[in-house]
Image (tube, rainbow, N blue to C red; front, side, top):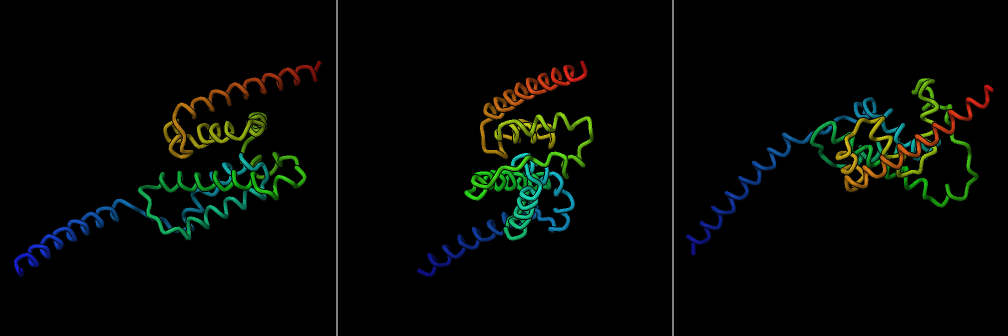
Length: 196
């Protein structure tokens, strides 16, 4: 009987040792950056992504604040800085999408998107026409276009962030590009007619 107890103790001890080695390796690989550093590094990116969805600077600021609050309160380790950025973007996109679906937002009077606000200060004048066209895209296409062209994520990374298949991301990108091409051609025609 004592031999059996000793043997099970020995097996448990080996399991605990291997588990603690695994935990130590996991802690070495994982990381967490202070909130002030995260805000300094990613505030602009998250704001622009949120603004692309909610089209209002006040709502975008609320989304950014909620995303950073969730980062601060969440007890989670990340694999890298890119993982932190992707997680924050995912949280911001979810919160912005939830905000657009909220009861309060659906029944308030729609205001014109403040295109010439903070985001416009970030972008230069040559990009303003393109930015306005992007803001007119449907939400699903707008988010994918933003992540691909403004945040430089690959199709695979966008699929991971949005929890979509790569083919869905490709289709949204293709449709978004087609809609942008059409909108920019119409704008170009309107601009030419204005000068004639």
